[in-house]
Image (tube, rainbow, N blue to C red; front, side, top):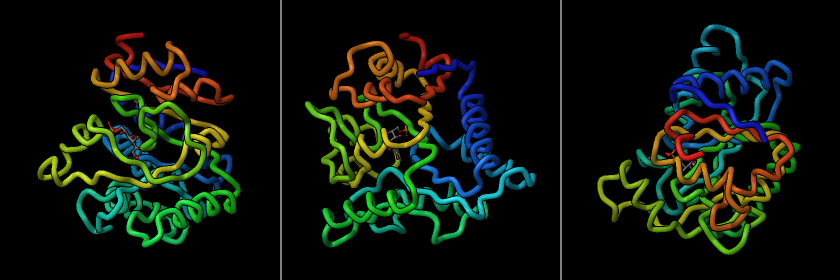
Length: 241
Ligand code: F6R
């Protein structure tokens, strides 16, 4: 496990983008695992800048997102399909057929979860997984629990996540209560993991993940057993280490 500290959140984004860029220079047809939410936005902005400057080519890159809300139309302003389109996909030369986000509107969600895990396996597994971390230590939507769930599954969001994500919706009642999420096993199978954490509201989760027991109550703590994981933190997120 490596932990890198930066003065600012924008430096964290630049560092993450440099690592993704280096991965794509080395292996243009890499399989990237992508996250949504506030944490990766500056990374995506920097990747777009590098792409527009002719440094990064996504034409053979494959992406799989971590998660999607259940029963939220994909064109809803808060869907992760829409987020990815607006924050990254429509600005770079990723091929639409190479980008994947779970279908939270599938009639049979268990079949969708199995299909998603199989699609990742068929693509050769994830080369580099980008992660944020929830205030409750979740990764993807793997919420605090008494166990780690291996594969893609349907998750019931905790009140803490509903409250954290309420900022994107008109009201708390509008936040979906369920999501499809990659499991911790699928995340741990990635060859390399980069976790981005910025801001003081992540400081407790970061400390629990990095310095306390490996415990499914803080799902990110399992990452310490990954052979190639980097935590990129700004000062505020690292304040309780
Ligand atoms: C998003 C995801 C979540 C977020 C986490 C942090 O795809 O899987 O685990 O990374 O909730 O969200 P932000 O970055 O908005 O604080």
